[in-house]
Length: 238
Ligand code: DC
Image (cartoon, helix red, strand yellow):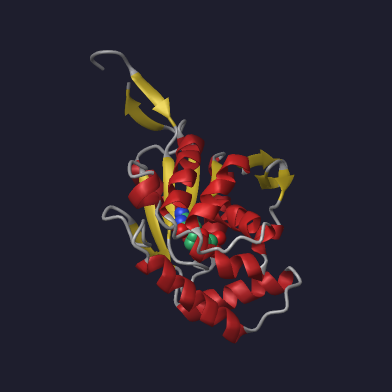
């Protein structure tokens, strides 16, 4: 074993992909199975967007938004019912899913100062390992050393159908056509922005979920995990 000994450390798992590919649901189930913390990074961008909308700030005004950081405390806490998103101590887990936030969040997420601000929070949450983190730039920017990286995709039509079901079950009145348009618009914004655009890390495993049910996708990733090493106990040389 040479100098020292092998220290057991939990893996970090990065799941990236476009809106509605199922990242958050898959990440949540994986985290539950592994006893890891699930960090849905889109929720962090959404929480800041909710604040921007609430303050009546123009979402394109980066410097006005940056001013908000002084009094914006975004956090994630693991509670018995799941992970809660807190904005200045207030539970905004439900509020950040509304259509207004969904329409504005890509604009807010484009600003370099917003990304920099949230980068520190995301890295802090993953500092001790044992995190399943989903987003757009996790494998490329936030956690480039994650032990497992998955790039989850699905056709825009399938993603729109899933999102419609989810929103309707929460009581939102939405049409398929509007959701498809909004998903395509967000895909473009996320992929074309100059800072941390949506793209797969070169070492990410691509996984197309079109036509696959959740269990199949989760099992596939669990299979990759076992080949990565002993996840839930990655070994790192100390
Ligand atoms: O996954 P979601 O739909 O909740 O993400 C909301 C928005 O946040 C999405 O339009 C892109 C942005 N986002 C990002 O730019 N980087 C991340 N790591 C996560 C989300």
